[in-house]
Amino acid sequence: MIELYYAPTPNGWKPAILLEELGVPYELKLMALTKGVQFTPEYLAINPNAKMPAIVDHSVEGEPLAVWESGPILMYLAQKFEQFWPKKDWRYDLQLTQWMFWQTGNQGPMMGQLSHFKNYAPEENKAYGMKRYKGETERTLAVLERRLEAEGAFIMGEDYTIADIQAFPWVFLAKKLGAALEDFPKVTAWRETIKARPAVQRAIDLGKDKAKHDQNASNNNVLFNQGAGHLMN
Image (tube, rainbow, N blue to C red; front, side, top):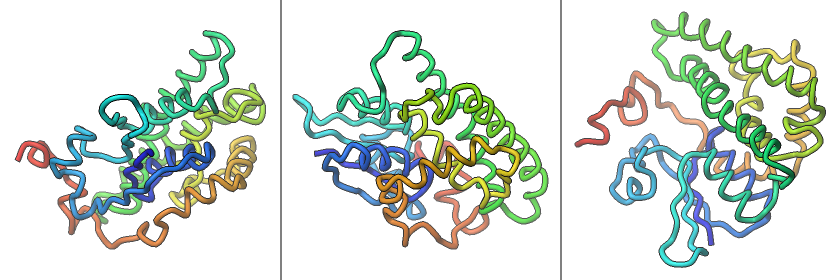
């Protein structure tokens, strides 16, 4: 059995989508992040970064295995179950890995910051953050548009892989964040193709009723305005 430590956000959707696509049994551990459950000793033993998602795989030999950060979780599960990472040659592996790291280091952080300034930042601090991260978000959409123009239906050409699963959730929310998709027809078609997959729909619906809350940077210093003290004390 695999435990999925999850909240209904783009980062939580990534492993949830893959688990639903794989059709393997898993136990959902819905996390109340606004209440600080991610800082408990029990969870820090699973994920020392005090973020979600994380999984604990109880089906391995020996002690249960904890895997944290969405990219490594996807890579672990794809290799464990031998799906959504076609085994072709080292060049293919390198390309897929580079696109996974692109999402981790570029698309995810930029769109995550856009989400923060649009949804959670104090009004007096929104303007510059929105301008900067909307521009950076659209830059990453352009990167993805060019890739899809060159390769075809998916990031790795005709293969639907963990690279698509990792990049999709933030693009799914792009319009809600103020980043128009009209200038990116290939990304728009890719988004619609993935969105229509039943496994994706099931994953996005997980904990949907818990997705909205009235917490923001002005009234919650547990989820927002974090510093070393959140981990050291």
